[in-house]
Image (cartoon, rainbow, N blue to C red; front, top):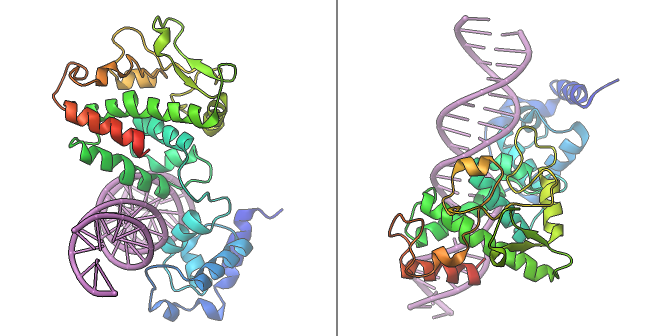
Length: 278
DNA sequence: AATGTCTCCAACCGCCCGCAC
DNA sequence: TGTGCGGGCGGTTGGAGACAT
């Protein structure tokens, strides 16, 4: 029985004797935006021969493109099931979470967002998150900014998700640790979002996104005392500590007892950004 | 209306890794 | 074991459109 792989190899091998496969045709490599005709050619070629062996695809399809260019165009644009359009609130939340865990592992993050490409996520991060860090005049990789994401931005996203889904107390899940005493500061989220997060994370081999517990329903956003000091260790444990709530970001309180980044002006600015822009 | 500036994102680049030989 | 090639990944760039002046 012929596998997809052997089919591709045989097809491309056949192509090797084709008149359209001459190296002289590669003399002028095209760059820049793809035309409709090029998209059509590539789509047809891949639908017949399958993905992979992109240099051969470039040679044999008649496209005056590099293999890398063909691969990129296919993966980021032409491939079926590519999701286009705005990143949803749920997706934003997941990106922030996964980035806090994995850093700039865009392809790994993209695996958890069906239909989204690493390029798209990378662009989102650069245009939205890095921009915000720049406006706050802090490094995007600094602890201060990461704290801002975890304690302000992500809870804010969850609030907006709740608001947009119109959940009631019956169809929401309260995100509290079992030992959390401050019930008034628990974060609520719609189970649908959790299910989406859960489905995103299925199939991950070694590590699970930190948003999930074993049951995929309870989500420990609330740490114990002193939980405002985020650490990679706590993330590794699968525990997010979004508390001790927004008080830490109120003007004059500073944050984490550390620096002077969280000036009144910065905090006000951040909250305005999150309220208006996200 | 014309020009300058900013934002977003598609595409490119260079590095690295795995695999075949 | 060394080498070359293909493919994947993250970083960066450039152009088009939106917006401001």
